[in-house]
Amino acid sequence: MEFTVRRKGEAVGTVAVTENARAVTFEVRCPKYYTLEVLRCYGVAGGAAHPLLLGVLEPEDGGLYLRRTLTRQSLAQAGFGAALPQSYELAGANDTVETPPEPVRREAECPPQAPPPIETGDPLIDAAAAAGSVQVERDGARLKVACVFDPCAPCPLAFAFAGCRVETRGDQKFLLLELTSPDYGTEKDVE
Image 1 (cartoon, rainbow, N blue to C red):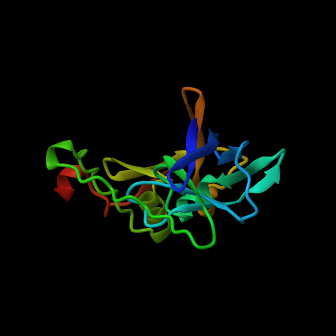
Image 2 (cartoon, rainbow, N blue to C red):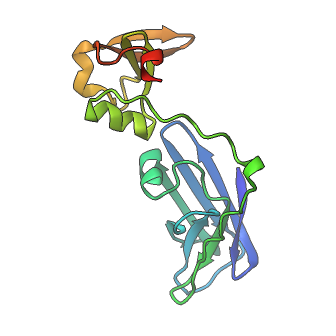
């Protein structure tokens, strides 16, 4: 995706955003804009608590340039896990970058609320489920805990690895942990 980068409202270059499963690369190019002032590039998203600092632009071939790769985890910690910035600005030392307010939606436009995650009673699994890194399903008196399995990536079920099995669904592998306890009951017992 490519976006326009602005300086005090004026279009001065572009930001190419390249995503993959683990990281996002931002490549800022301002080929015809040159200044001796130190400029930082910020990504701005509506409703975000603060803008995302990409970094300081460097002179290159008579213009300014910046290439920055951020992991999905660092973007999430910065408050950009759900959506990436859609506008980009250059700011100097005395400039301010304001985050636009999130648009107010009418109740009819709001997506339905997701049901709360099923609680297992295990604080590590419950925290991973709340963060969305594992899914918990009820199957009678059993709970099935699953996450995508990638041997090269951190595993949210690493602490329970000995009790897990790998299952293939389509072309993707999942790590599956089954928990059995009379305390879990069935969905009818919970209601």
